[in-house]
Image 1 (cartoon, rainbow, N blue to C red):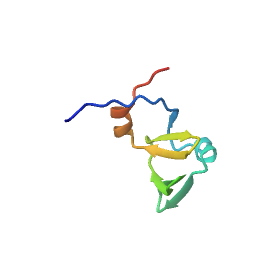
Image 2 (cartoon, one colour):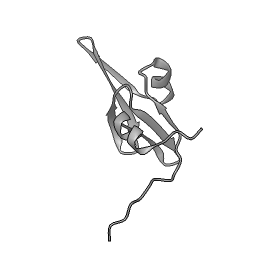
Image 3 (cartoon, one colour):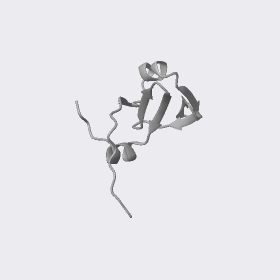
Image 4 (cartoon, one colour):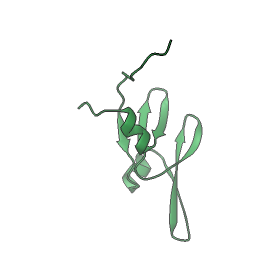
Length: 79
C-alpha cells in the first residue's frame, strides 16, 4: 500500500556563497580557468562539484551538499 512520508530530522546547513571565508571553513577546492571558477567540496563520497547557492550540511558522519532547488523543497527553516 502506498503511504506518504515527511522528513522529520533537523539539520544545520549553510548556503554556499563562494566567499573565501566559506572556502577556508569547509576546505573547498577552488579552480579557475579563463576567468571561470568552479569549486569542489570534499564529502564522505569524495570530491563533489558545488556551485554558489548549494547548501552545505555537516554532521557527525561528514559533510555533503544539497542543491538549492532540492533543499527548498525538502527542508523548512525552524529557527
